[in-house]
Length: 311
Image 1 (cartoon, rainbow, N blue to C red):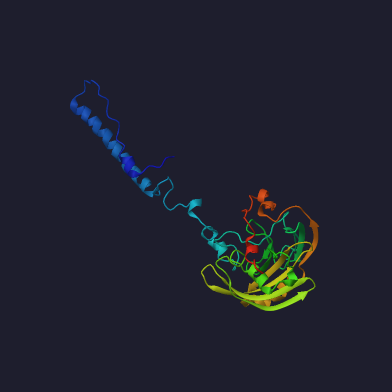
Image 2: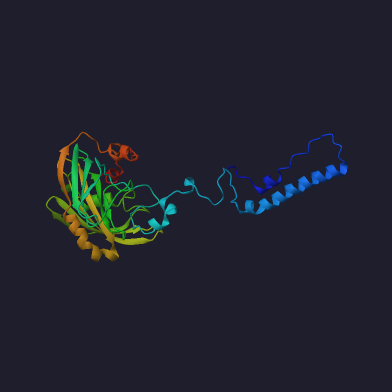
């Protein structure tokens, strides 16, 4: 139905009476025309309340006050009740974070839904496909915004991240700053509203081939406030690969005392269960989601790797 304004409606004049030869008197003809005009005005008056109740039509045919998809620029506007509950580093008004993860298949989970065993096959540099596993303490999050991530509604959780080592270097040769620069980049999981600040390595340890860092930092909230947080980073270098795979767990500082045992248990279970050779390159277009679910944006280079050049 084509919308019509009141002014346009009232401008529609009644059809002019046909000019016919009639034996009726001029007074009788005038009376008939007057009746028609009167009926037309009465119909217009009856339609007035209905027309006034309709929303004004803006240019382009969209009623004023009605929002279309073009009216929204981020998830915060579409669903504030959802984004308002997310912790620092979670889904935000910016694009999806860069974790360096390229998946060969859907992330697998087994056991309890609230604390599953998670398994993900990753494409790594060096011609290696590696299956990373860990016993999660939180539900697995699925969707195009997430790569491999577990998280609860309070903002506690963990995610996998992959970073390329400098040429000719191994994980054992790298300083702690290599890992912190990878994890706390502005394009990373904690950089949703700006670069994290006050980054401090509180402790370092090793367990076999795994390196473990406990870190304090401040992440920016949607309102621009700094939120003190803690993170536990478990890092391994899969055999044959020139990449480091990290499980990054964390919570707010206020919840750290309660969350720390869960996060440490989760980190201790993290391992590379198996590796195999592959000719697939670690590029976004080779992620199984590129075709199956609409794809990921191809990048000219690994932006996480670029953050640590020079180490």
